Image 1 (cartoon, chains in turn brown, blue):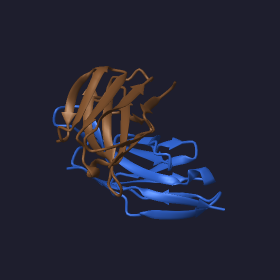
Image 2: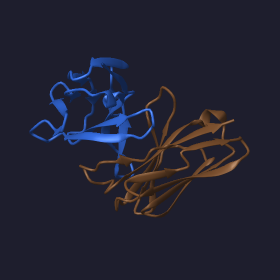
Image 3: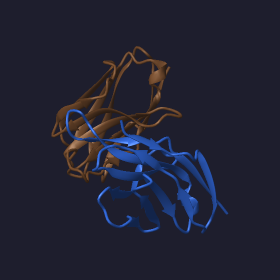
Amino acid sequence: ETGVTQTPRHLVMGMTNKKSLKCEQHLGHNAMYWYKQSAKKPLELMFVYNFKEQTENNSVPSRFSPECPNSSHLFLHLHTLQPEDSALYLCASSQDSYSPTDTQYFGPGTRLTVL
Amino acid sequence: AQKITQTQPGMFVQEKEAVTLDCTYDTSDPSYGLFWYKQPSSGEMIFLIYQGSYDQQNATEGRYSLNFQKARKSANLVISASQLGDSAMYFCAMRDRLTGGGNKLTFGTGTQLKVEL
C-alpha cells in the first residue's frame, strides 16, 4: 500500500450505531488530519494530530471521537450521529504541521450516510 | 481570518486547449502558502501544485502552472493541453496558522471543470 488509505470507503449507519473510520498513511509523516466535506460546502478541518498528540479540535461535537495510536494510524469513532453528519470524511497526512512549506496528502475518503 | 475565493463554480474547456481557474486570497500574514488540489468524482483530493509567498518564480508541475500575482492576491491555476481525465473539481487552498501552533488548510468552494471533445 502507498500513500494514504481509508477504510471503509462507504458506510451507512443508523443514528444509534457505533462505527469507526480508519486512516493509515505509508509516507512516514508525523501529522494527521480529519476533514469533513459536506455537499456544497468547503472542506472543514475537524482534528489535527502531531506526533500522536491532538493539537486541534475545531469545535467538533463529542459524538465524533478521534484516536491516534501512532503516527501512521488515525481513527474517527462515531456514535449517535445525526443525519446532517452525512458527508465525505477525508483523512490527510503531512510531514510536519509546523513547517512553513508543509504539504498535506489526502486519502480517498469515506462516504458516510446516516439514516 | 484568512479567506480563499473561487468565483467560477463551473468551467468548460475543449480537449487540448488551455484553461485558467481563478483563485483570490486574503491574508495579513506575510508568510503563506497556496495549494491547488484536484478532486475527481471518486472523492480523493489530489495535490497538484504549491506556491510559497516568498517564491520568486511561479510554480510549475508538468501541465500545471500557477500564475501567482502577489500584489493582486491571486493564484490562478493554468492547465495546458487539457485532457478528458482533467474533468474534476479543483480546489484552491491556503495554509492557515492554528492558534495552538501548526498549520491547517483553508479551502475555497471549488471549480467544477469539464473537458469536452
